[in-house]
Amino acid sequence: MENVKNFLNLFVEYLQIEKNYSQYTIVNYVRDIEDLLAFMTEEGITEISEVTYQDTRLFLTGLHTKNYSRKYISRKISSLRSFFKFLVREKYTEENPFALASLPKKEQRIPSFFYESDIDALFSASDTSTPAGKRNQALLEVLYATGIRVSECCQLKISDVDLSTDILLVTGKGNKQRYVPFGSYANAALQEYLSAGRAELEKKSSARNEFLFLNAKGTPLTERGVRYILDKMITQTSTIFHIHPHMFRHTFATHLLNEGADLRSVQELLGHAHLSSTQVYTHVSKEQLRKTYMSHHPRA
Image (cartoon, rainbow, N blue to C red; front, side, top):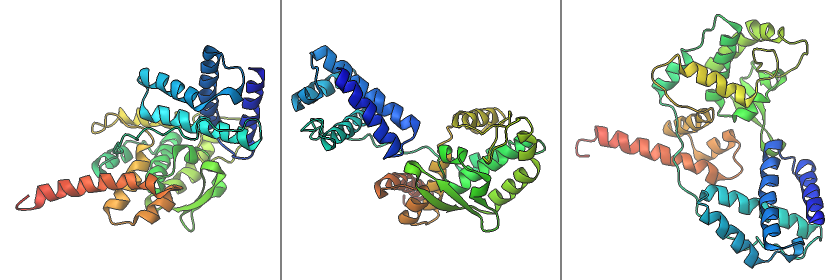
């Protein structure tokens, strides 16, 4: 099994250097591959080249019997398929036993999103007389105005914000960059935060940095920090009981489509590589149209 562990180390280097994947993504890949290694040990398989298609079916059957979700199993298959594809490319093995493994059909879940009244309640929850309140207001406005991922928001630097043209330079998955516009409300909140809030937060730390959003200690705000801020703001509203940061992205896409934006434009704004990822939001729009029809048509 020593060779297999060496292969895993080489694969991690490939993901870091060639694919430029985030540490979070790489950790998931490693976890999935380590599960296969544990299976190989149980089955007495010592070489990676000995893994057959029949072994993969046995491995996946074990996952199904443990009642793992289809999404979880699909991720395992994708990770291991990529791992063996790399090994075949590097000539460490001749075949990819996961090449024929079929992905379970995805559960069709409609993304949760905010109604406009919910958004208004959140926007009125910030105490904008404090530096942290100014930051929170700017954070909310940017997330809703742009639909960027929370991870992308946390990576924004001051130089990525152009207040004269209302454009953000966003670095997304795979280090791909895109320009995303924002509106007057986000512009006003950002100007207020940058002129009177961020400098006060930065004083809390001896180190200086160029990240746009800072936490109470003056260091870059993290995804966990964003969740904490939102949870704290929820306690100050009475209309929203459970939210997660990604809901702003869902809301951004849903509201655009509800107002008539075309799917391709929304895809580009969200930074989706495939249109199918954006199409999930059409289900939300259709449901909204159905409710409107049922409420207003005389013979509904």
